[in-house]
Image 1 (cartoon, rainbow, N blue to C red):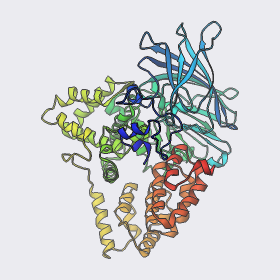
Image 2: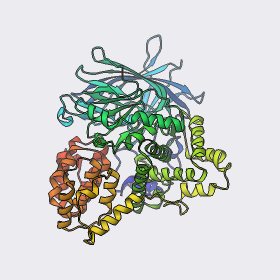
Image 3: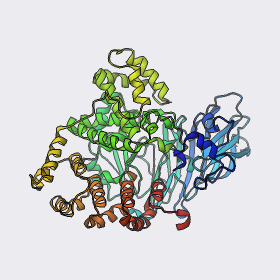
Image 4: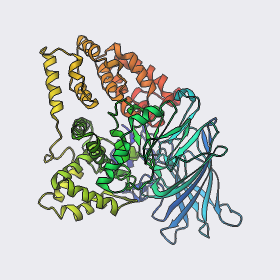
Length: 640
């Protein structure tokens, strides 16, 4: 059982001296308990941050870093402008993790005096609290520091790991990894503007979550500015052999030279997506909306870093069938980047809203049928996910405290949140609900809010206006009850009904499989077809499926994933070569984690899993290895 799954009272007991379980052994003091009833974490404004932003809050960062690929570190300084929330406050509290702090000084016109600083509370996941005595004159604070080679928010790749001629670096700051490469207040409740000066070798180019198109470095020095205030998890950097191609008024593709053309074709609908979203929810407020196509080791599908979304290459399918991921990251420009969850416990405010807006974009650009098919797949996956989740984790407001904020992200966060908004739309009508969301985004633009703030706004601006259609009692069921409300009507599509009938006819020998039946299928129909097959198939059935549809050779990452999962569960050895290639070439957790879990569920395939992982692990991001190490029983302290 992981630490973050322990009931809260047990968590407190385990933290008392002499009570630590040998299997749950934090490297440093987990929590300083202020009293016997609750830990200090829950008395801070954000339990996942050591910052006391209710006393002193950061307003602006000036980041100056040099990228050292040889030692795999960023070195330089950050200058912090702040404001006192409490006039009597005398200290600035920051989050750090595995940072080497060298010197802290006040920035003023005299002699840059050293400031007194020290470490406070610490925890293996949360890092170390950095406490700095404020300068008497209120001047900015300059922190000289260096990252560590294994910073959790950075991945360093050699040229061989990127199939290129140059090394590559990229960051992933969400949820609390920004503190591993910048000392700051690492909480979504604090929004900052920033400037940056990045120095690199002339053979590579840096890009940040800022304006990038006109960046031409002089002697390897690049300057950036982000004038809109953003939370720390949206500060991002990437450095490598990166070129760019402008594809429309607001959109450019940034990618390796051998990828940029394919990506430009794949994501050519992005400008249309922006237009559709602006029609529904108001102006796009960020200037450029560019896409950075990262190396395959990127652990997520996408990351909504403002002005430059980070995108996995696994959605380059050649037919634009997976570009709903672009719709999702774009939607964050309204829900998440513009209006942000103030606490990670309220992550559904970011992801549920975004998944709803994604569906509206797909509807506008690709049509209702595709949107409904994707909704149906998502609903089926949500129900399957809920079967594995404890009851509290099936609620949009999860009452169980977790020390790891990543535990608040699940299909519930994304899809139950989305279906809640679907239901609200269905109750009052699309036009009324769009007006409500427009007002919501305007009201809370560039702010971070809680679920309580949203529900109050919902009550005042929708529920009370339509009491015969929505009640706060129903809203409470969505937010605080497990499972799906019985008054919700799930999405369905006749396209999937036809596929179900086809599968049934084939299994009963009433239909012969031919390529003709699937010639016009979309990716979504292929996924439903594969998921409609029985869990156990005969060797003859597997061979027939593969020979008819060339499933083992499919390059569409989503279709390949589902087929490889079937192959593992049925020990279809013909597909093992493709499985090895798949797991060693990509690092997207959504796609690789279920395959490792399936391999480890088959005792006969445990050695195969271990051998593949041994070969692939070095190219995976730390976010991926932290999860898969546990699955395959890999101990990095022993193996490395």
